Image 1 (tube, helix red, strand yellow):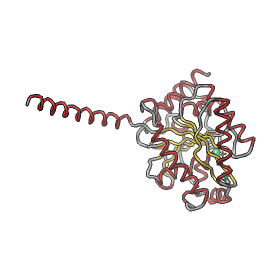
Image 2: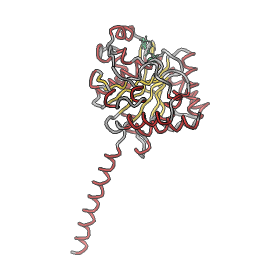
Image 3: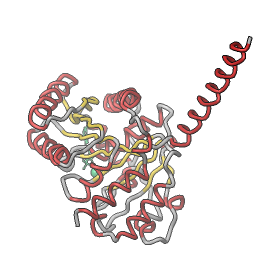
Image 4: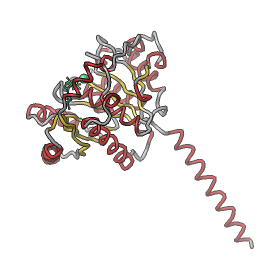
Length: 303
Ligand SMILES: Nc1ncnc2c1ncn2[C@@H]1O[C@H](COP(=O)(O)OP(=O)(O)O)[C@@H](O)[C@H]1O
Ligand SMILES: [Mg+2]
């Protein structure tokens, strides 16, 4: 009898503990930060960042897109939006994060970087902290924060890459683009990048070309840099991609059934599945706040 009661109590205690753990995990749930970057410019970063974000929205995810190509912000232009406020209003303390977020298609939220903003590298500690505090308030409100960056390996861009939960490098099959993509990965590998790493091959003739290029790229990175890169997919070269820019619409919105749109939707699905497998064991190590903390620390250490 007595052992029966003890058993019941033990089970009750176990149930309560599981419930507490589940609730704590819920509170700790963080937004996954994904940076889209490339070595070379003009290879399709903004196209992928925008349409991947929209594809994730279509998969029922809550997504916020940060346009951090701070020199030449253009996601808003691609969508025909003219936001009133940008990240610099936040830096200057003139606006809150809620005031600068704008609505994109399919429920996407957008943080416009604005053109002419000082590079993060030139911001003071106080200004960086303001960005961190304000944008950090969004942590957990979204499943994904996708970050579109400028090309190359400026201090600014490198800090973003090193801080991300996941980096997606986009390249075309052209040797110059591949070499620069490799250089970019080499730079972050040398600096002990800890997050996940993926590659997308853009402007391919067909799917097989994408697979072949990605496989070679993966092998070179493994052999010479000892890093593992997962292949997320490829996107065909298609004149529709340029057409929608002129129409100031997103591809995923205007032509969701086109080949490049379907390819990007597939990339989004793969990303979600892989993220499930690769989610960090300790969610406290990731998220938006952590992302900006890491950037701030990097800027401080490298000034
Ligand atoms: N798959 C594609 N097929 C055809 N044109 C593309 C494709 N991807 C990108 N482009 C075009 O290449 C140019 C650069 O793309 P963009 O996304 O702005 O690159 P980035 O952000 O890397 O500078 C744009 O004119 C865009 O329309
Ligand atoms: Mg761009």
